[in-house]
Length: 355
View 1: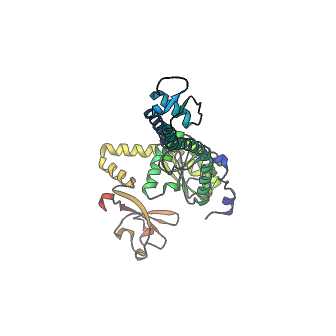
View 2 (view 1 turned 180 degrees about the vertical axis):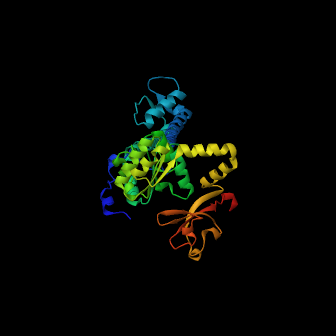
View 3 (view 1 turned 90 degrees about the vertical axis):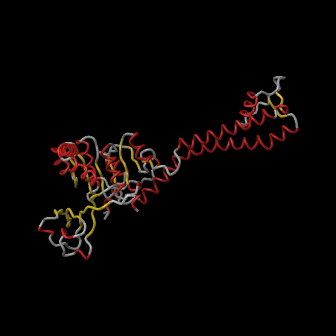
């Protein structure tokens, strides 16, 4: 539940100055593709006008030369005509050429101008459109997940969230690297440019309304600072942090992290296991991959399961969450399931071709 204090710390996201810090994902073609299409349309109109004039060369006269209208002259006329410059050195003189200019060149001129003006207006209004989309997003976003750092760990975290059914619009990536943010935006994620150790950046990312924040920075000291800042701003948000060295785990815990993953030692254990029991590593990787094979999931205890043992269920149960405590499946405290318990179990992931 969001407290009144958390509401008051929310910064209005409709501020136009936030455009450039927050970037909403593109809903259609990329700006580069749209611009190329318009350039192609403009040059197509120019070429069409030039070909029409060149094929009707007898109906046009060059006031500066007695030679017939060449293809180069036709392109020159098309350029000055479609751009409404009109030097008057090449003009239609026969009734047929003037009629052709009226029914062909004039519509092409309008098309050419519409493309140019439309592109200019779109570029000028892009900032305003972004501000409106940011304001709409900020008004409706709730219970989203913030991912700080979009390196290897951050990408893997996002892939797992998406594999578990999260919507891209419910994930906000915070980073300072424009290349990383471009990659996140390509997946349809909302991105925020800035240093997450600053409280203003986390407020822009909507920390007050977030359900969780994943700290996946490349440095342990940065992870500690981000965790401290996030916990101070949002006392109730769930913070999951990654560190390289196990000696820094207690710092993250003291800073307010709910869960701490030691990336270097976890990878080292898997490397050691792979040398003697590679099949075990394959099973672990399968369990950690949400979109194929088996996956570790969580669900509530059903009414028919209350009072029974988690070891006797059809699902393979690994643990039981009761309140804030996690018990292994063989713990005596969870020999009898209670209402409100949650089961950590192994579920089969159905592939699309298995439907």
